[in-house]
Amino acid sequence: MLTDGFPRYLIDIMPVSMVVLTDNQITYANNAAAILLEADNASVLIGRPVSDFVHPLDITRSNNRLHRQGTEWSNAPQQFRLRSVKGNLRMLLVASLTIEFENKSAILLVGMDMTAQSEISEQLRISEQNFRRLFDNMQDVYYRTDAKGVVLMVGPGVRTVLGYEPEEIVGKTAESYYPNVADRDALKQAIVRDGKVSDFGGQMVRKDGRIIDISISSQAIYDEQGAFAGVEGIYRDVTQRKMLERELQRLATIDTLTGIQNRRAFLENAEQLFKSSQRYTTGITLLMLDLDFFKAINDRYGHLGGDNVLIRFAQTVGQELRESDLFGRLGGEEFCILLQQAPREDAMIAAGRIRERVQELVFNAPNGELFSLTVSIGVSTNREDDERLGKLLERADEALYEAKHSGRNRVVWKD
Image 1 (tube, rainbow, N blue to C red):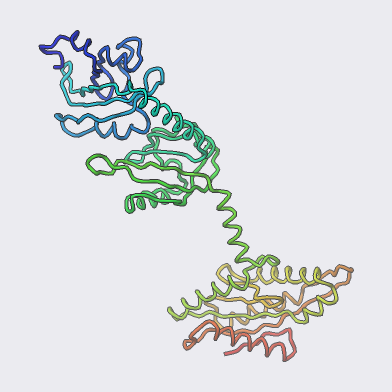
Image 2: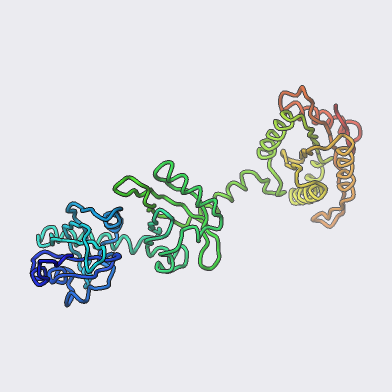
């Protein structure tokens, strides 16, 4: 035992701080320890966890030293930052070893106050002020977890980002705040594989239930034996950025007038389906559509009247298509449809139905005049010897040309 053959009063008068921990709580402290930690007396410290006094930046190192495996070990002296009962910062040189105290396995900490040197003390004070100012005013959320993903520490920025108080987060698993566990798993795998991540995307659920987009930059923490001990890093709310990116992506792929795919998006998607159909020998059918006498409509009723025609035409055609079909505006009054797994007979029926629906439309011109519209359609399907999508587009365009020059308002097939 600690006091066997060595009176406790002799320990109490020693000039170095001595603390005994049992289950990570202080069960004995001498007078020097009470003075160092600015406690009224040693009894004030009894029962408190040692982590109450360890600076947040040194908690991981402290835990790694105190949680070593085995019943007999000692740690070489190492410097740690401590906070006293009154909140003042201390720099301590600490050594530790396992002992038996009052018939229980315990840890003896012996420390020497290193803050007496005014220069070091001033540097510590300035460092602590800067750290606290940065930590308290960060808009990003600083966090640290253990190896099991349990949150050990989280910064005050979590109030703004997730709507929680820090103490509501500590002690819970990080997975609790992910709407999709796969996002958290992907993050963990990336950190284990690469040791760190930067601007890693994901989503979290706020306290009010709203899902936000986040960006995470984190790194793995390892103990003194090199084993994975947890993760620390920051994350921030990037919802506005992601919304802007999604809107830019939408604008890059959607025809702003009609709301259907624009030329680039349609051709890119059609190219992928074409390659798939050639690889797996499945059929796709292309419909090329062109509004009849659209220039005359524009000239007579103006661009406002022409735009209204294009919008209603796209809406009408879209109602006749399946979810798996592609529909895009190639430019002006020219449109294109790609039907998946539609034999010639079904494709011609679909094209005929579209032609009839368009012919039934009645438009109101800005001057109150009523007018109608017709559409010419060229149809073709892919062949085994087609080397590229362009071949299919050429045949459909030839069929459209024939429809135009044989009277318009009709559907023509081209093998």
